[in-house]
Image (cartoon, rainbow, N blue to C red):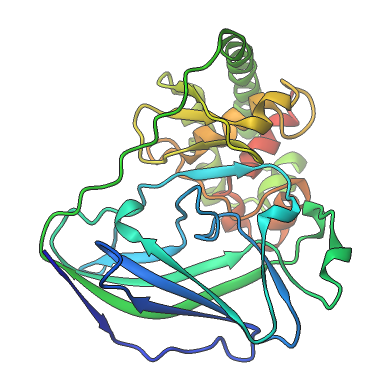
Amino acid sequence: MYLLFVLFSILFSLGSSQLTANLYPNLEAGLATVTLELVNTAPSTVALLRWNLPLDNRFGSNSFLVQFNGHPVTYLGPVVKYFGPFLKDYVFISANQSITMDISLGDMYDFTLQGKYDVRFEADIMDYMVSQDMLSLFPREREAFTPFLGVVSNSLQITTHEYISPKAIKTPYPCSSQETSTLNTAAGAQKSMISYALSAINQGDTPTYKEWFGTYTSARGTTTSECISAITDNSVVAYACDDQAGVYAYVYPSDTSHTIYCCEAFWTAPNAGGFDTKAGTLIHELSHFSNLCGTNDWVYGVNGARNLAITNPSRAVANADNYEYFSEVQW
């Protein structure tokens, strides 16, 4: 069994940017494993938010473009709704220094077919800071995020000659009776909340639609209506419990059982009424499932979602928090 890696484009920096991503083959670390290097070319320390990046080693991240014969392959890892951020959610890179990490792509993407895969790192950093006095910027609020968009590495080609088995979905601990009762209450509120959202979305071009999804077009109106209808009509859902700190919940988008893994921040959120509620979080997570809506986490937070609706409506109609907040304001 072996993998053949071909480096077919020159390592490059992003113009005059202060962050460079380089991707290297890693033949010794395991099947379909690569090494990612992030280089800080800024004159001072930078801080990168770990969320939705390989920098959070608790979860996989859909931060690579992996193609087989020119077609994107399925991401099999989890997507996460985070709480915070906290200082521990950041990685600090000193001036003119770098960090490296080995990433097993076979744990996160479907490498079951034998042949040639083209791979590159493509990601947005949700919060990126450059400061001589970095710690003065904390505690950090989501409303203060300064994203760094479009970090792209060189490309690698991976040739597989044997079957690579996908990583198994995590087995959580059993929910307690109290947690089960809380989940049942939240699920009831979620069903009511999404029905209110369905009535609202069917009204078409309204101020509330524009607030969360941006300028109305018939195509985007259809996208949002179909998503909310799919969540409303869905009868397949399961709940599991996990103890991940700084996390509301996570799901595996390709999981047809629609299991929602509820974590530490979920239990202290309000059931309904306001933003980032338990009921709203369940809507957020349901929207991620590929056979319902297939949303992403382009941004987090109320201000981020509102701004996305203004600046990029096409992403707003594919962002989980926008569906959550649109639904929560109907309560």
